Amino acid sequence: MRRRARAGETEEAAKNGKAVKADLKEEAIRRREVVAVIAWSVPIPLGHAVQVAERWSGKARDEHGVREEMARLVREAWASDVRLGLPVQEREDAHAVKVVATEGMASGGVADAKALAARACRAASLLQGRALLSSEALALLGAAGAAEPAGAAAWSAAAPALQLAALLGLLRLGAAVAPQPQPRLLRWRAALGARPRPRLRCQRCGSGTARMRRTACAGCGRACAYCEACLTMGRSRECGLLIFGTPSLQARATPAPSAASALSATWALSPAQAEATAAALRFMLAPAHHPAPRRFLFWAVTGAGKTEMIYPLIEAELQRGGRALIATPRRDVVLELDPRIRKAFRNASVVTLYGGSDQRWEQGEITIATTHQLFRFQYGFDLVIIDEIDAFPYHNDPMLQYAAEKVCKPGGVNVLLSATPPAELRSAARSGCLSHVRVPVRFHRHPLPIPKQISVPPVHKLLKQRSLPRKLVQSLQRSITRGAQLFLFVQQIREVEPLVQQLRSIFPDISIEGTSSKDGDRAEKVLRFRDRTIRLLVTTTILERGVTIPKSDVFILDADGKLFDDASLIQMAGRAGRSSDDPAGRVYFFAPSRTRSQQSAIRQIRMMNRIAKRKGFLITHKEKG
Image 1: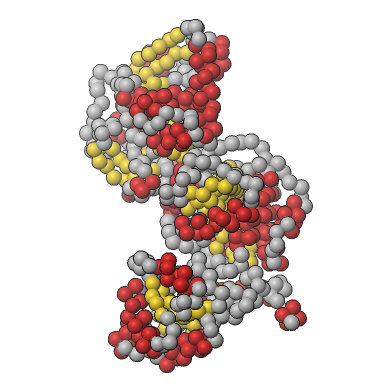
Image 2: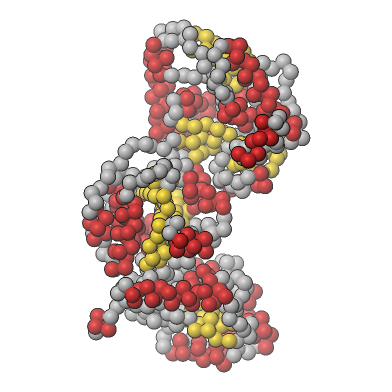
C-alpha cells in the first residue's frame, strides 16, 4: 500500500466539512493501485490549510505518523489566530481521519478518470500564465466553454478538475492572502520556541500587512483579512482561493547569430533606432545563464519612436514561438497602440486588456494591457515590454512594479522604455549593473530644443497683480507670430482659469482655453488644439506626455516648483520640436529661481545632443540641402 498525505483545501471542501488531503497520480488510476486519503474531520480556513500544506514535511511513513503531524500543524495554524487576538473556532474533538481506502474501480471508473484528466489538462492550458481568483477562473473557463455558468454548481463541477491539475503540477492552488515566509535572520527565534506573529501578504499584488484589513466574513465565519490595495480588481481575501497557472517550459527556437541585424533591417528605422534595436535584439537572443528574467533599458528621448523600435523585438519573439506583452500605465496609450500593433502584425493574434475590455479572458500571441491588468497574470510571457516606467501611476508604486516583474517567465526578458528613467535606473545603467542602450535623437535627426531660463515672479503673484511680465508676453507673441501652437504649463489647477482670462485680455485675436484633470471637456479641447482651433492651451502636467502637436512651443511657469522634477520638465519640454517640419521648437522655463531640477533637465537634454553628435546621428548641413 502506498500512503502519502498532502494538506490542502478548496472552498467547496470547506463547505462540505472536510479538508481533503490526497496524492493522486495518473499511473495509480491506470494500475488501480490503493490510495490512502486522510482528511481533517471539520472545515478549517483556506489560509490555515495552505499554511499546513506549506509546512508539511512528508517524513511520516505510516498512518499514525501522518495523523500526528497533521494534528500538530493544524493546532499551530489556529495558534496564529490566537496571537492576533482573533476569535478561535477550533473544535476540541477535531482530528485526522481516514476518509477512504479503495482498491480497484467500479465499472466505468477508468473512463471517468480519463475524462476528469482531460478536463484538468484543458483547464490548466486555459489558465496557463494566469493568476486568478476562483470567480475569475470560473469566468475564464466559462468563456472558453470549459465550465458551466458562474455559481455554486459551476464551482462544484470545476473544482475536481482544478484539484487534479494542481496535484499533477499543472496548476498551483493557494490562499489569495497568506502568511509571508519567516525572514532568515529571525528563524533563530523559532528555533528557540518563539512564535512570531505571521505577517500577511497578498499573493496577487504583493502588498504586505500594512494594506490588510479584517472584516467579518460570510465565507469562513471569522474575522478574515483582505487586501485593500488591489480591491478594485476583486476582493483578495485570506479564505479566498487564488489559482496560478504554471508557465509553459517548452523550449523556444534559437535564431542564428545574424538574426539581430536581419530583423532590425526589415523595419524602416533611422540609424539611431536601428543601432539601439540591434543591441536589444542581441541581448534578448543571447542564452540565459540563470532562470530569473533579465532586464534591458531603452533610454530614448521623447519623440525617438520607441514603438517602432520594439517591433523587431516582438517579431523575434513570435518567430521563436513565444508570447509578447506590451504594458503601459495609461488606458489611452493602450487604445492608441492597439491599431498600430494590429497593423504591424497582421498575422498575429492580438489581445487588448483594460478596465471593461471585451477580450478579458482571451489569450493571444501579443497582449497590450494597462499595468493594473497584470495582477491577473504570473509567468505568462516570454517578452515583457513596460512603456513609460516613469509615468503615473506606475512610477513609485511598488504594487504595479511587483505585478510587472511577476508576469515574465523564468529566462524571459523584461524591456523597460523611458525618456526619463528614475534615478536608480540611471545609476544602475551607468554602473553597468543594468544592460541598456541610449537613443539620443529623434527620428528626424535634429537636436533637441534646449530650454531657455527666464526669471519672472511666481504665478500666484502675477494673478494678484493682474498683469503679466513683459518678458513672458513678448515670448508668447513671438511664438504666436511664427504660427506655433502654445503649451503653457502651470502647477496648480486653481491657476488655470484665472490665467486664461488674463491671457485672453492680452491676446484677444487668438483662441485660448485651459484644461486640467477636473475638466470634463479635456479630450475635446485637445482635439481642437490639434486642429489649431485653439492656439494657446493652459494646462497642468496631464498633457506632459502622450500629446504630439506638429508645430508647438512650450512655456513652463513656476518651473522651480516642487511638483516639477527633472523628469517632468523634460517630458513637458519634449512637446516641442517633434515634427520634421518644425524640429527647432522653443522651450522656456519661467521661474523666480533656478533649481537643481531645472539644471538637471537642461543637462540631460544637452547630454543627449552631445551623444547624438558624437555618434553621427544628427542630420548634416549637406543632408539638409
